[in-house]
Image 1: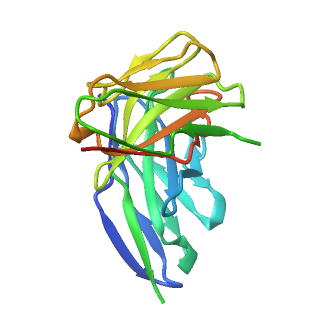
Image 2: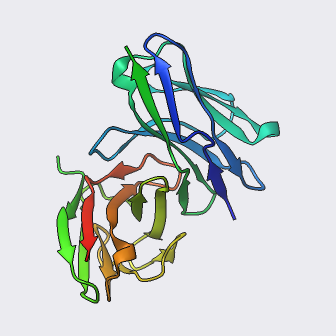
Image 3: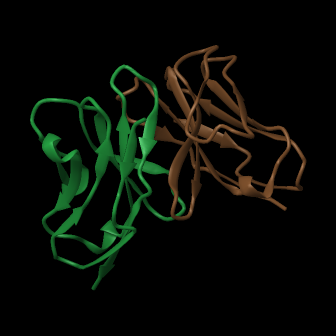
Length: 113
Length: 112
């Protein structure tokens, strides 16, 4: 069965510092991969997605993610974090040809002034 | 410009009571999903639908039933509520399996 693991429950970074949020998935073939962000009391918003092709994908708000097949990873990065980036981030995987979209446990990001 | 609408937004139930959460989308999406969100657990898929008249089980389907009689609506039912079903429930829809999910605002359910 497909699964998604986000090893870091909570990360704190200083404003202006770089950020990397980790995501590992378990699935035999290459799945569709996503990153979503959730601000407090809100629903989720799509940051970026990977289907195929270029393994480095660009998203909204200055985020990017890199698909590494050998490591079954899809880590999210941002070169310089802003205070407004404080939120919870979810990695998700969908099976190609299927209907299920499975989310990881989430990583809560705090930003220090 | 409604998008995905969930009703009710808040509900308190007693153990053993039943209720139905309604999700409505006006984007003509084929795929619809019900998730529950609990602290430290992320979003867990309860049931989903790939089209009108079809439903399928997700990761945590026990204690829930769903129906998709109309393309725009996806109902989530609790026949006999239990305290373990206290959670925030999110409905989402997408135009295809790899498409962007559009989420409702969530429904907070408390079972006493």
